[in-house]
Length: 271
Image (cartoon, rainbow, N blue to C red; front, side):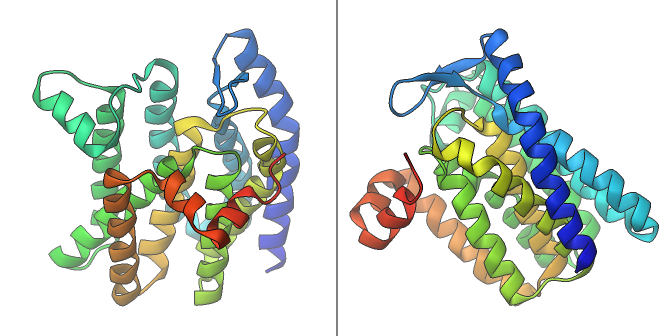
């Protein structure tokens, strides 16, 4: 537990140090976009998650040499989705949205950055699932859990703080359900990143972008398949499928706004 607290503090510290430099770099390179209020702010700030986790993973490798394989699995997932996410942030065409939109364009001979991201995410999900699965049924359950978690925060990252609040909420649930060992330590390090970045996000001074939402999302998927029983994974898969189905038919922002409790939590802390 002490080591978990240490890596969380390191995450907060490195996040707060990294953010101003990354903001200036993105602004100078004109990697900017309009937020929901119409202000011009840097996008792709979720790229800060990668150096933060690199620092934490290095610390964990020094302390836990017998668990390096798990660390490198997370590192592979994060960097792969970071690559796909930053491409979508930089050159993505937002005219196509949702699985239906991207697949429709693909079958018409057009490769969108969203489809590229879905393809990369699918491959990495199947790769990681293959390592941690026993039997074909668990393999597909694990793969879809990773893939859908990877996309979950992307669906929610439409208002300041929403995706990070969701991550923290899910992280607390995971800790209550019970995770231990290296996955618990990694989750604490990511909680530290979310805490460090959240004030910036709530004030709408920058956007995490797909590079942030997808890299954070895949960590939830990997933690799930490593830590939980098949029954818990099935329940989470059903919930993920439900959210994705709803998002294809309705605006999640409107759904959240129509519910008093969800809207209150969504607006909490936002300036």
